[in-house]
Amino acid sequence: LVIGQADSVEATCTDAVPGFPRLLLSHNFLETTVCLFSLLSASQVRMEPNGCADKRVVLLGGEELIRPKASARAITINLITSGLGAAIFSLPWSVAGSSILPAVTIAAVVLVVNGCTISILVRAAEKYEVFDLGSVVGAMPWRIGKPLKMITNIFVWISQFICLVGYIIIIHDSAYRFLNGMWLGQREILVFLASICCFPLCFLNQQMLEKTSSVAIAVNVYLFFLVGYYYSQASSDSLPDGRCLLGFSFPGNFSMFSVMYQAVVIQMCVLPMYEELEQRSPQKFDRIVAVSFSALFFLFCGFAATGYLLFGPSVKSNLLEDLPSTFGAELARIGTIFVTLSVYPIMLYPMVAP
Image (cartoon, rainbow, N blue to C red; front, side, top):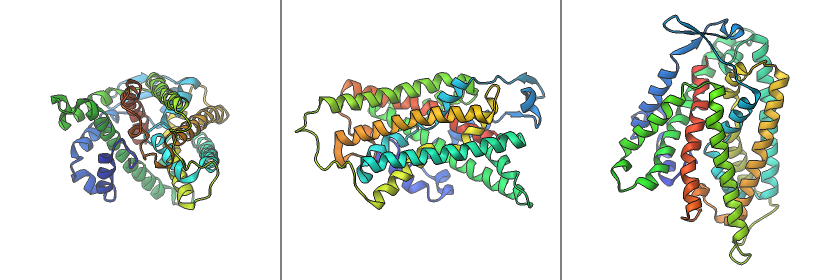
């Protein structure tokens, strides 16, 4: 949320995030209401305690239907998309503080650590046949499981809810650039349109989310090649000075760790994905995580290094602000709206999983 689309987003986060009640009462109340509405609507469908084994889904009205399973390809694409939120746009800025080789090393370490924790969580979920983070933590012994489950669910809900509010703000700020001065550029109208787009996506299962996730990946790949094209077209004289291949900076490395963890700490999202995986097994999901995180590693490192080499140490915390006002760059800015829309339902999933 802190590394959102524009300076106005950063200012909003600085004011709101330190106190969650202030977020609800601030000028983001409209975005907050939208997220609450989509959350409550999506949570009208819940699983029976033993509904996972026979794929039965029980609606609150008592009707039963078959919950479709997701293919390994769909889960892989959704897992990649879950790492493609707003954090990727700040990676070149993080590399500017860390330098290229340490940043690549940090990215690899963070992905490996997260991959190992996901593997542990998936095995625990399979053992106890529960598929949300709170329930897995709740299986701990010595009577501490129940309170830890409640605490985990509260923190997951709050953190994900703030993330969803941030996505609505990002969509607003991205669209405002093109609609400023028009009646569609009014804040209330833009937030309403964002909610209209997000709302139906909240009801899609993992198999159907593969389509929207594919769009998000395509936009990020396009942005990577766009930055690479600008770099290849720039002459050596026009490139900025001060670019560093290998340096040592504790604050810079710490920032790189922070941005990477913000991008790939998705443990709360993977258990609902694992639940819907067809013919699921921990070994099969390990392979999915390996493929997904390998793709994220090359995309993160390639995009971060290329953006840093192109704009140098003065690269902004949101790379999109450094791009020129060309047709290709404007198309990439529009594409970020679709990326945010694609990530939104994936981040909502763990909120309604318990």
